[in-house]
Length: 105
Image (cartoon, rainbow, N blue to C red; front, side, top):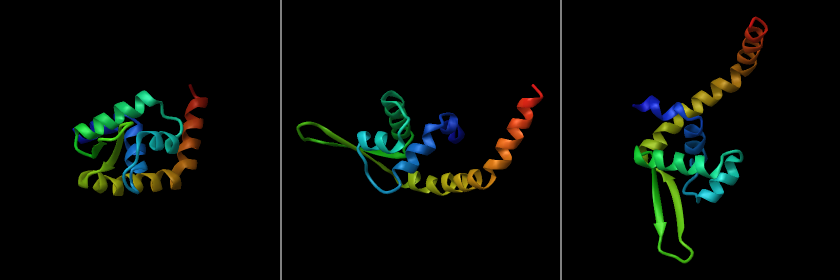
């Protein structure tokens, strides 16, 4: 179940983007950059459904919504950051191996 969350490459990106506190979807999309509105919305809904983020709706005009990490979401930051550090340290090795593999196909 837990690993099913990471089928989408955007799960870790969205959780990491929420590390500093509540954010509106428009700010998340601007910070992340290359995520479409639909993919961001689907990702936020999935993360809310499994309890990693909380959605706050404010009774204002126009309506305002913010998302923030729950305690389990905050706990997920440590392994996400560890994976990011690993990827940064080993990116050259992984890319070189991938290029070698492509040569033999």
